[in-house]
Image 1 (cartoon, helix red, strand yellow):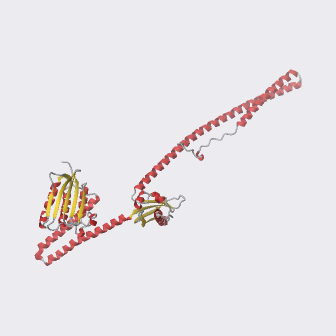
Image 2 (cartoon, rainbow, N blue to C red):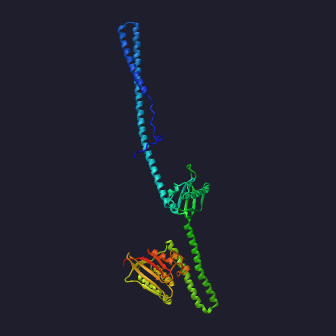
Image 3 (spheres, helix red, strand yellow):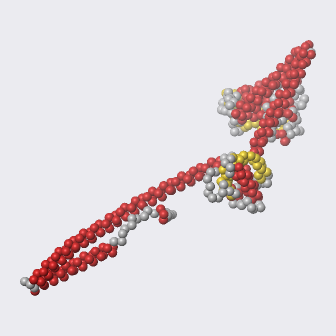
Amino acid sequence: MNDPKPPTHLRPRSPTTPRIVPLVILLVLLFAAMIAVGITLSDLLRLIDQNARGLDWGVVLVGAGRQLLLLLGIMTILLVFALALVIWFIRRAEDERTTLEADGAIFYMGLKAHVGKLAAELEDERAQLKALLDAMDEGVIYSEGSRIRYTNRALSRLTGYSPEEVLNNPSSETDSPGHFVRELVRLNEVVQGVTDQGGTWQGQYKIHRKDGSEVEVGVIGASVSGSNGHGARVVTVIRDASQEQALQAQKTRFISNTSHELKTPLANLRTRIHLLRKQPEKNEEHLQVMESVTSYMQQLIIEMLDVARFEQGVMMLEREKAALEDLVRAAAKGFAPRAERREISLTTALGDGQHLAFLDHKRISQVLTNLISNALNRASAGGHVWVRLVEKPDSKVVIEVEDDGAGIPPEMLAHVFQPFSVASQGLVSGTVLGLSLSKEIVELHSGEITVESDVSKGTCFRVTLPLVES
């Protein structure tokens, strides 16, 4: 591709050379004329000298002619000197012009290279800024006056509209993109009303997605200094406020459920203290109940702290190689008396051989204890609970805990591992954080925990863990 021609105002100017060609021609003509006059005068003097020798007027005329020849000679010498000076000046001017043209060419090439470098750096910075904006989780809008000039990918993910649909559709259109653009223009007008005074606008706003759904967003708008003649320039950052509202609702629900879970045992404690004073002969019975209640509260607080540590990533596992059969057998053995009291058949099927895993004994036993306890709680008197260990072909093993009791409703399955999600409905036993904590523990072991349930057949929890070579 040919290089573009440099603009005229950037071309270096050549030095202006005086118009001395006519002067040179004139000097040459004068020089030739003087030589011709000198030759003619010399011939005339020689003729006078031959024909008027001895005459006074001849002597005077010859003398005057010789003086004139001398004068012409001097003038000729001066004329030659002047001609040489003019030629020297012309050559010097030509040399200076050649030098300046060479310097100008070097300057132009250097300027071109510098401008190219600046353009490349500007394009690189522009690409970096675009990549940064596209990588943001919040939508970004840049507008000049009422015209939207840029939107990033996050806004497309939030609304369903591509940047081209937003930028290429004026706000006056009646179709969906136009309607969405009108919403953004109204938002931009609100932001500009504050930012024109040097402030920053922050608040909530509702926009419509491409699928027609409405979403509430959090908006922060700020003006950009300077003007380019297209109106006030504003940068608006839009984030999905629905997730924040959901988290706030989850936080409120967590606090409410925690308060409820602590309120019941505290009320039980107050009752037992009152009965302890009124019925001193039943001290042992009341103390046993109080000890059980305080143990439950202590376990609840411990599990709440554990959940917080797992979510913050500060829980450290003390791993070592162990046989899963031993852990499952020990956990099931601990619940044998409880199953016998409730006439529930607790069966283990561990298969042959040993399946070794690199894990934290205490934490995996905590998971197994929670799952078996919940299964015994759901199973009715005379029911069954099965604990199975099944090897998978991809160096993994699955621990299944299944019961034939009341299943979990389908609408609750998606929330079964969330704190307090199903405990308040009596679907699990033990503390209300057991399943949530079990999920954190299993995933920290690079495993997976899932659940299947049928309200008429029962529930089956599956814990998948990776194996290690023996």
